[in-house]
Length: 142
Length: 129
Length: 194
Image (cartoon, rainbow over all chains, first blue to last red; front, side, top):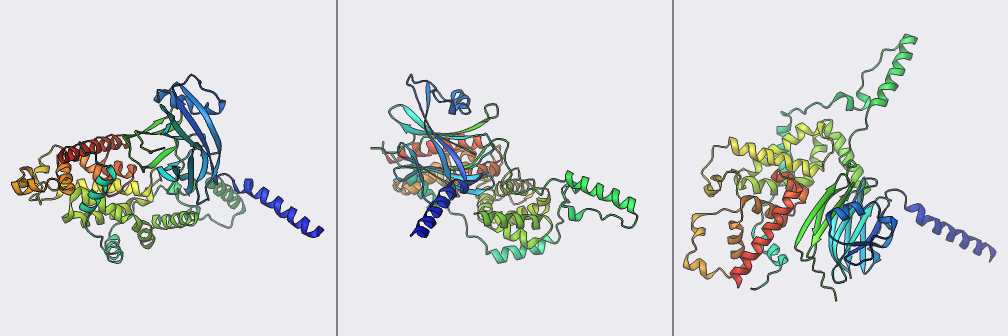
C-alpha cells in the first residue's frame, strides 16, 4: 500500500513537472487578448506597454485593456480557449514559424502563418467586441 | 440589389478557371536532369563554405603545425553556420493570412519603430448570437 | 513537422552542393504553385518552357540563396523574371489576347478577351444571369493588375508573399489590389443579378 502511494505520488510529481518542462522555448507562444473600445477605461495593465505604441499609432480607439494572458502550447491538436469565447490553435512549422488559427464558437475566423522574432509581437485584430469595440489577439515568443 | 457571398464567387471562379493539368513529376524531373547538367551552379561565397572544404594544412614542422592549428581554429570562428531556408526575421513577419468569414478588408502594418506587426481585418461577419 | 524541417534542411544543403536529386525532391512540392503562377503570366503555350527555365535558374542560383524569404517566394520571383524575359524574347505575337499586349504594362492576360465578348450578342445576353458567365464578364472588366492578384490569390490559392513575388509588388500593394478587385467584382455581379 505504502509502495503504491509512493509510486502514485512520484508519478503525480513527474506529471506536474512535465507540463512546464515540456513548454521549453519554442514549444509555446504567449497569447494576450486585448479589448479595444471607446470607453473611458484608459490603457490599464502595464503588460501592454510593448504593443500600445503600435496600436495607438494605427487605430482610433480610446482604450486598450488586457483581458487575458497565457501561454499556448504548440503541440496540440485542439484549440486553447483564451477568453470571450475565442480559441487559439498554434502549430509550430519551423524555426520561430507558427501557424495561428483564431476561432470563436468552434468556427475558424482567421488563419495566419507568422515568423516571430524575439520581443516582436504580432497582433491580429478586428474581431468584434461588444457594440463598438474590437478584440485583438497578440502573439509573441515567451 | 441581390447580395452575393464572396465564398460563392470564389467557388465559381475556381471551377471555371482551373489551370491545365501538371506534367508528371518523373517526366518533368528527368527532363530537368538532362538540362541541368549543362547549367553550372554559381559558386557560393568561399567564406560560407563549410569547414570540410577548407584548404588542408601542411603537416610535419611543429611550429608551422601549431600556427596552422591556431589559424584553423580562428578561421572556424569566422564561419557562419550554413543558412537554413527559414531564418529569424528582424521584424516579426506575417507570411500568410486567410480570413475564413465574410469580411471587408485586410491590412498588414509593420512598424520598425514600435517593433511590431499588426494584421487588421475590417468588417468581419462572425454572426454572433 | 520537425522531421520535415530537418529533411528540408538536409535536401537544401545537398542541393546547394550540386545534388540534382536533392534539388528535385526539395522543389517538387512547389511545382504546382510555380505552374499556376507561370500559367497566369504567360498562358498555356509557353507555360512548360518557362517553368523549366525557372527551375534551371533556381538550380544555378541556389548556392547563393540566403534564406531572406521562403523558398516558394524566391521561386515565384524567379518565375516572374523568367516570364518577363520570355515575353520579351518571344517572337510569337499572334495570340488570342492581342488586345492585352497593347497595354502599357505589356503583361500577359489571365482571361482571354476575344472581340466578340466585348459586345454581347442577344444569345449571350440570355445567359447573363448565370453567375459563371457574369464572373467572366466581371473579370474582364478588371485591370490586368487587379485581375492577376485576384486570380493568383482566390483561384490559385497563393500566399500574399507569393502573389507579391509573382507580380513584383509589395504585400501592401497586393492587399489593396485584392481589396479593390473583390469589391469591384462583387458590385459587378450584384448589379447584373439585380
